[in-house]
Length: 193
Image (cartoon, rainbow, N blue to C red; front, side, top):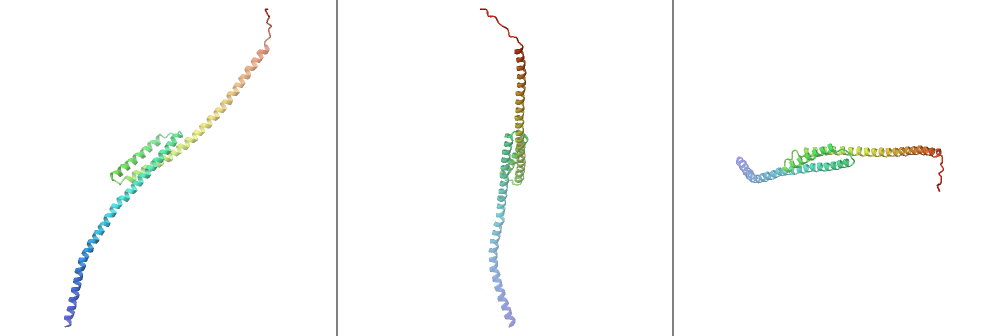
């Protein structure tokens, strides 16, 4: 009898566990389906977010390079206005513009692999051109100031020399003229009247 009670109790427990497992299996299947869907969505979202984040990084690189090229162009223009030779700077600035255009084209086609490196190379070249242009502008300004000072000093010395030479020549001719005038005898002219 005790064995029967144990067996019934075990059977009841087994049936209860079996029913709960069956309910849990149905519930687990629903939970597993929902869980798979949620995980799939969470896996897909970062893959969409990554190109957007990478694209914004690429856009920032392109914009920074563009700003650097514009600043370099402004500095090269100032160096040229100061009288500096900017031929080589313009060639290097053209190279930076070409790299930026390639980065832009690569970005537009959707290939984001080389955009940052091309934009960074363009930015580095533009920054170097900008600093070289500032140096050329400063040296051209100093050279122009030196030329102006030299021209003013030469003009003053030339003017003073010219005045002194002209004074000496005048004095010599004046002395000679005075001697001739004093050496000449007055002649009396008869009046034929």
